[in-house]
Image (tube, rainbow, N blue to C red):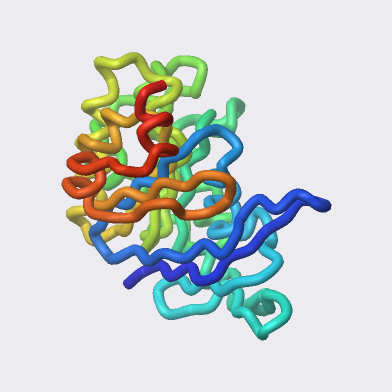
Length: 248
């Protein structure tokens, strides 16, 4: 198990956004979280990546506690421990968030060298391996404005993989891509899973979830309504909320 989320609660002011959310992610597993807009999907991703603090609950990443519930609130890891936990997490934003003034190579090595203290030689070696794996070797010196949407997505994935994460989080990875590019991203995600990385995938794209996921969780109004294998989820939809969402 590379990720455990247990009894997660989060409110913004008086608005409960997550209500007792629990799930686990195994190494090499692709878990898709689906649901309507405003259901809490992105908030889960933000809590897991320590971009938003949860109110209650436990988040464990590869055996280390990002936060632990003490019965009344979540107690977060100390700064030195948090840095180690952050190395175990990779995040690809919906809009990629590449640095526009940096080349592809610079985008990939920036955090390892300047945030986590990775030796330059090691950072560049890893970056070159990732570029080769993702078919971007010839784009190392290019800038984001020179790349297609699919290429930007792969650079964002390479950047997230630069620290050898145990968990990769992807927020709507196909939203900015033409349909013909989605298969390439699906193959990339599957390759990452084969390397033993746990994939946490947030998506509205039902066809994409059905294509790549091993398990599917449906969330609505901050609560998990259904969680099962892909085959069970898409093969026997009984809940009216899921039926309504699937019909959209």
